[in-house]
Length: 148
Ligand code: HEC
Image (tube, rainbow, N blue to C red; front, top):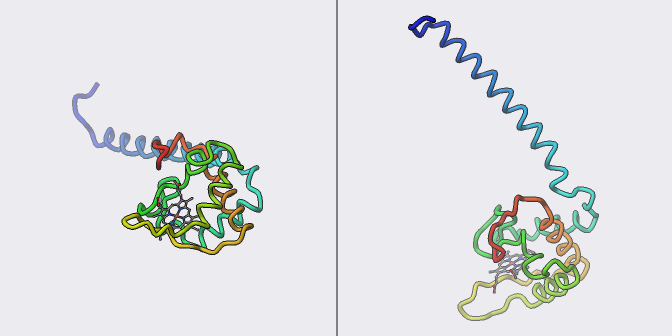
């Protein structure tokens, strides 16, 4: 074995390393792309969930709230509001959600306020379905804190 580090050895490390990490990158990309549809429960994507997402976006809820960590940090995380307030029961959650949305703003002095959005019953139902669906995405238990 040569005790000199030759140009040839350096080149082999360069090409070998590039090929190795390129293949690793391709492999992990394929793994992510195949894993995501299962994690998202796409078979449960109803029309109501899709409408709820549109209402969520049109009213800029994410301007104050975060959803699975993404968004603003003025108001609580809502990716886990279904287990937090509905305890896994859709009826309990929908009752809570509707009365919450209709009670805004609370006007409690010193408490951060959420606006009144004047949404219809159907729109609230859609939004609730969207939040329920979101909470069922397999996120490796993110967020770690149920209080968001
Ligand atoms: C201007 C900022 C703002 C916007 C925009 C906003 N919220 Fe909020 N939201 C808040 C604040 C602040 C709180 C917490 C209020 C409190 O605890 O008294 C809150 C709380 C909530 C809660 C209760 C969370 C819990 O843990 O009980 C829900 C549900 C909610 N918002 C849904 C929505 C939805 C849906 C939208 C969009 C249609 C929205 N919010 C838009 C500020 C906002």
